[in-house]
Length: 153
Image 1: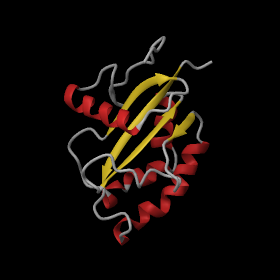
Image 2: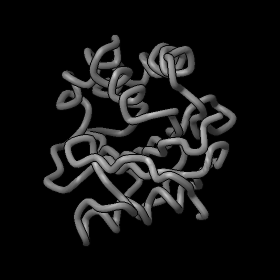
Image 3: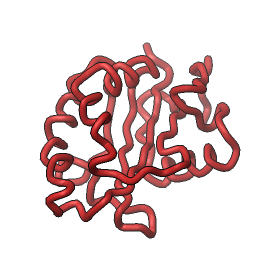
Image 4: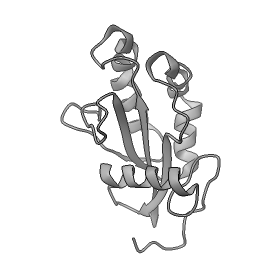
């Protein structure tokens, strides 16, 4: 029985409003990419609104910032989905749809199995990573932290 899940939160700042022609390629691919995640080995859960994705959620003062939040069984499972599926094709095209930001955009952290992190948790973890760098509270794909032997959070 798994004792922990990997939570991830990431942001992106759109180059134009979500209903603009510039974002059409991204917006039109959301259902396909989300379905691919849902069916991927190691997928556990993803945050979504009634529209089936998280594009209407705006936790920042900037309405151009989109978020993504979910949980996976391991760093490897999430990494495989991000970099070794059709998702990678869209990732390579991200500059068409999103601005370059010179701060961390994705944060990872461990949660007890079954925990559904909130958007507020994701915002806090990303801010922690930006302020303090990677560690047990918040880390990245490049600077991973092993799952703890037990979680009490």
